[in-house]
Length: 486
Image 1 (spheres, rainbow, N blue to C red):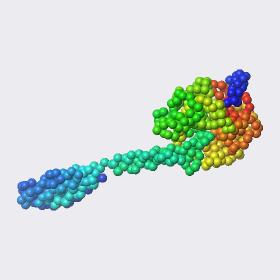
Image 2 (cartoon, rainbow, N blue to C red):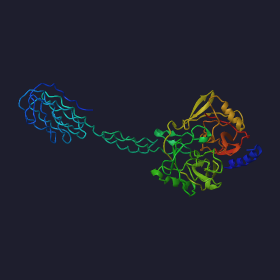
Image 3 (cartoon, rainbow, N blue to C red):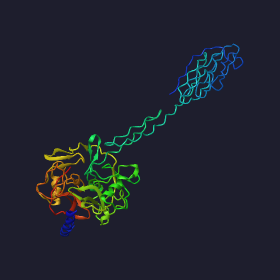
Image 4 (tube, rainbow, N blue to C red):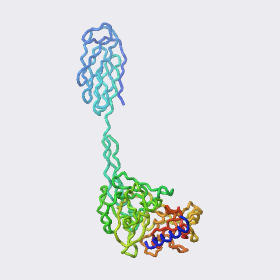
């Protein structure tokens, strides 16, 4: 971080200068006829009721009365249903019998006896068959509706899909017998991250990126959002990356840090790895004051912020053209920088989910377009649309902000985190280290302004050095390039 450290000195000089269903009953018409007595005779009386009884719904046998005239006998009481349905109907009296009772309860219902009591609902069976109609009696009372059988339990959730290219979803669980469908299986793990940046492997050979989160208090697109519901794990809802929440107290070399993450089995996952410099930079919150951890303190407690190497975090990103150095991220001041390989802290990462719409064919990440008459490049990895060129001259910070606002198409000056997304870390210094989709700047300058103010220093702002891709800051009265975004 040779150049950023020089800038710090320049900053302090300049800052000092600037100032800071149911069954149906059969109904029969009645005749005047001989009545059936219950073992006696009736003289012109109403028909005797048939006595129904017995398990399985067998009705009692009625006795015929001496002939006499009278109205039809009242319907016999319906027979009691047998266990599991099928009540046997009572035998009709010699007098005019009652009409059949209505169907038994839903289930394997008992047959309604002519004049029998309604059978109890069979377990899960169909409605009982109507009993034979009695002779010319008054209609029997309808049987009560059967209770519906209980539904089957819902199927168990399907097993999670196997990890694969791009993380295909698991198959849904089979439906339970008579119940609802099983829950869909969990999504399979997405492929490993691409080399040299924050891209993840996708299905069919696609490469997948992610939107760059910004601090919620910055009022910029894609505000950072974290889910800490899984013990020991922080899921970034914007990037789809999952992070180790509790830090190891040990410092590691880059190789040791990579081995530590590879052996990590936190949450039952085996695809933990050392993050790239771009991935680790997604956790930076440039709105935090320098000297406190420049990340979300609730999602990532106990992040070191002392002004020593203890707050340097290892990344998997090497330095192009120099195998003795590597990239670090310092959460004490939010900077990323190059330094000699040595010890550092580690926070492991894994690809938890692919962000919809952020995948592209390798080699076709940037798509040429035009916005308001301005040549632009759509970044398929982040969804940002970049001005292909730069501003007409070097500008102080306030002029750079206004220049972008004045362009047609809702352009703005990018945040320091967004600016990092177009760095090609595979390009050796002196670069320029921007992706080849962007031409070398003219006029030449090593630095680009960003919209990110330097927290706690009202007259300072963040910069990105295009000769290395590292971050720095300076007073807002300095003059640098502007490349706009929307």
